[in-house]
Length: 494
Ligand SMILES: [Zn+2]
Image (cartoon, rainbow, N blue to C red; front, side, top):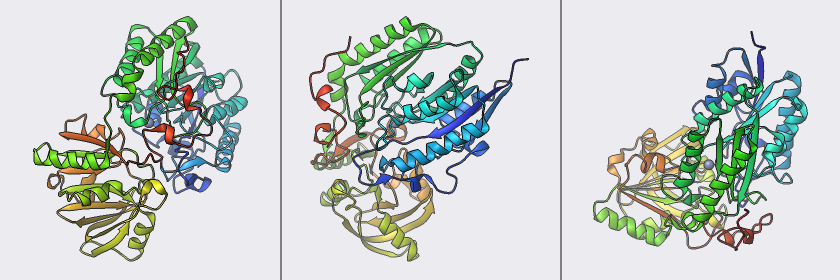
């Protein structure tokens, strides 16, 4: 009989757009169901990293998982800025207390994202790992899962042993990476895997809208990583694309390779993939066409006239969810049979909820805009409410207006990732030719990779607002963009 293995499970995730004005506060992490501990934590996100981790860990005999009280994603999801120091200190403090109370542990699983940004804490995931290490001691193994948008350098793995990042954007393999983390954690604890790792930064920074792994050259980075994992046993490769909308020191592309005790192999592979990225730097930054909003709406109109429908018009740059530029242009160019999903307007949805809005009511309101300059001005919509419903912690109001158009007003930022989610609001998808949504790449899961849309148009406003592809217009304080391609001429770190 082997000794039983005790593994602590923690969760702390956010993708922080530090250029948003609304901080991510302690309150945002506290709601019914969060923070959460024990079995309820292990059951959170069953199709994602956590689900994969728990499923695989429990396939081994003698493994005990202990869910340590942890916050789930904040209720603002990705629509909020800097995580306050109070939130970080309070929540990690509770996690550390939980670890202390429930220990000792042979291993720890950290379910993180990698692009959390905390005021006064330059590398929050690494700082969490450092504190966890302080409690569990040098002999325990610490493994984490990451989003490929994580902003990472070698700091995290100074305190933790292993990290597993998703390889695809859209992130199809979250569950798979959770499974890997569990298996490798158990193997490391049993002495069957001795993690050796090498991290290489590649000085390339890109807006996330360009990072779709369904096309070259981003796809080539994914493919190269998969080839290395296939041809060498016990090799794991993370290609972090990074998240440029967090003003933190470790943005940009990062390659991380994990091997079973073979540091030279890890270094060779990391350099190989870093070189591939560098050779393709121009293509990485130019392969995705981004239109102005006026141009995109005109192209959508032409596509409808040519029968190349459905059309996706994706305003990739709206980070608050309240931006009205695309809605305004759709009205100005008099498009018909368009779904606009969504305009976030917390005030309007609260008023509508309070007044008991329901299907059949006349609608006449100014919607969206205002939260900051990137949201633009409110737009007056007159029409008829066809649905008003509570769900997923938000109030949703579906308004029919103009020539068979529908506007969905939500409380918070919503990324529509696949068209069928709109059916839940009672909509007949066949009645629409154009889907105007707020998404960068995740929508390709349900609109593009499956062949649903015939025309895909990515747009952003003329002004370089906080979600722009023109990163040099953003007010960075912790990043010198000149150290990154395409904003400077950095040397490749050979
Ligand atoms: Zn991501």
